[in-house]
Length: 123
Image (tube, rainbow, N blue to C red):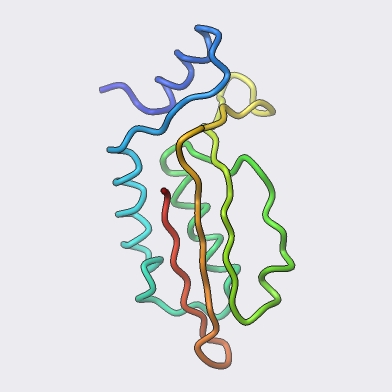
């Protein structure tokens, strides 16, 4: 079975600078989010911890963020982030391969003191 990253590298070698995330991998990532409680069923002491958990899940699939999140949003009692994604490029770590059909969305809101609900998904 060809991994998503291997497929992305094949596209890159063929001269394409952007790739698509296949539906199967999207589903697997969203299931992994569910397993770590990013479906709203787990509480986090601060929203950054939920965001970090989402990034860790993405790394398991050789996917990384294609942009930097603005940390100001985490100072609010509720917020939403939408971030572009990229495949990790093992041949050149400074040049991730942009994914054109998927992004990470993270929403959170404060339920009470030190208790945040965080939801993450790839769409």
